[in-house]
Structures are given as structure tokens and as C-alpha cells.
Length: 256
View 1 (cartoon, rainbow, N blue to C red):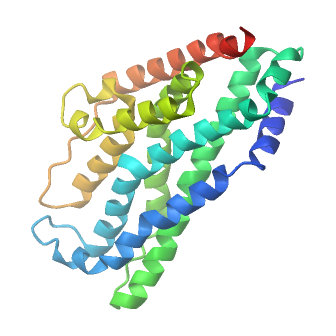
View 2 (view 1 turned 120 degrees about the horizontal axis):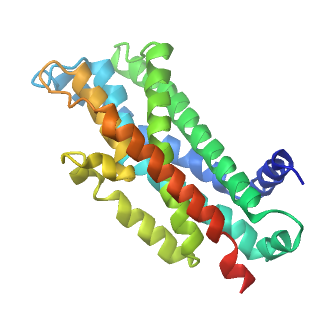
């Protein structure tokens, strides 16, 4: 079985799960507070940011700090439980299929789910912005090129974080512990983005990028520009190491 076939098989498996539904619900929940508290966007004179920019960035900040990482953690656990629930992983490992290919196929599906989540969150931004514009009689809708650029940067910054979450799921078999460990790793992100070694903590990458974009849009805030070196080499190294270790250790617990 080639790699593409494995990826297709993995996509078929998630159709029977609730991962897509959970991601959609998370996207809806994220923007509800923005609609309810839309009037607060007109009180940002001290920050020096326009209401429409603040509306978008505040939503993306909520996505970057908690909603997106939490959705990925729950999605990874459900992805694994889909296999382990009916001992499907045992059946897959009994086939003449490389465990490395199988692990990479699952990680590819996971990245696809992450991209889908970002897309849904972005689409829901436009839906909520349209509703808010009508309620507040003010145009909160930003140009698609700008919004999708921000979403694209966010997704790219999240890849190392996703690789770490996937590595944790390979080693931690118990769903409760896997979710708990993942959630615990999200919390320090707020602290890490204010340190000089933020680039050593992948879970802080998405939040750092959105915070940086916030600083660029606000006249009275300083934007701490990320230095591509050492960030890019460190991020690439963390991603590579996590994927390699995951591929080497994938399925070992089930084989015992």
C-alpha cells in the first residue's frame, strides 16, 4: 500500500468520528463573544487600533491561545481512539505496511484537519463580522487577502506545535492523561511569548505571531518582531525531531 492510499484510508476513518463536528462547534463558539461584546471595539483609542482590526485580531488571539490548540488536542485523541476503540491499530500493524508510512499518513491527516480548522475559523470570522456589522451599523469586514494572509501565517506557525502534540499522543496512551498533558502545555504560552527564548516553546508560536500582528496594527503598541534566526531553524528542528521520534515509536505499545 503506497503512502497516498494510506492517507485516503485515514481520511475515510475520520468520517465516522466527531472530529469535524467538534471543530465546527469550536469555530462557532469562538466568535460568539466577539458578536456579543462588539461595542468594546469602539473603545480602543488608547491602543490606537481601528474597530475592525481589533475585532479580527481579538478573535484570532482567542483562537491562537486556546481554541485552536484545544481543538487539535481533542482531535488527536479522537483520531487515536478511532483506531484503538475497535483494535483497528492492531489490524493495521498486522498488515505489511511500514509503521513509518502509517505514522506519516496520520500526521498528514492531522495537518489537513488543522488547515480545515483554520479555514472554518476564518469563514466564521466573516460570518460573525457580517452579523456584527449589521448590528452595530459599522463595517467590520476586512479584505480577504489580509485575513487569509494572517490565517496562513497562523497555520504555518502552528505546525511545530502540532508535531509536539502528535509526539505526546504516541507516548501517552490514556486519553485523559493525553488531553491533560496537552492542555497543561497550552497555559505557559502567554508567559513564554514575553521571554527571549519564546522560540524554544512551540506551543507559543501561534500566539506570538498573532500578538506581533496586533502590535503592527496598533499605533500605540510596540510589535516585537520575531527574528527568523534562530526561530526558523529551531522550529524546523523541533518539528523534524518530533516526527522522527513519533515514526520510530509509533505502534510499539500496541505490539507488546
